[in-house]
Length: 155
Image 1 (cartoon, rainbow, N blue to C red):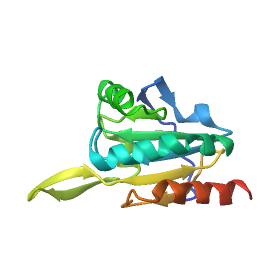
Image 2 (cartoon, rainbow, N blue to C red):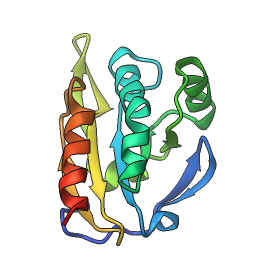
Image 3 (cartoon, helix red, strand yellow):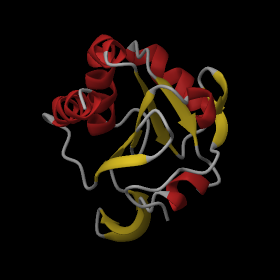
Image 4 (cartoon, helix red, strand yellow):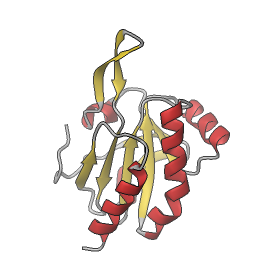
């Protein structure tokens, strides 16, 4: 599991833009957000919020990456249906989810299951994890991330 202040290992995966490598974004901030499932209400709202705020993040030299266990094909359909412009990574083998410790036991519709707990991580231009939000509630979250990024980028 990765902790605040720790250098992230090389992370690679398939995304809606092809091969994704975290080290390719050295020199930029990275907003890495984990969400449970494409095309669900909370996940759709969060993805739309990040897409709407993308120009503000780009102005602060930040790249937004959403991560779920869905396939790239599912992500592509999600992006098309919702007009998303952010990059989405497929973590089908749960390597990223495990590293960031976002998979937990949950109860859904009265049944126990393992699921992704909505979480966001801010990575600085040197590839160090500098802030984390866990068990995120969607309303206002993107504004919180943007505010923290603005604060840290100004230092």
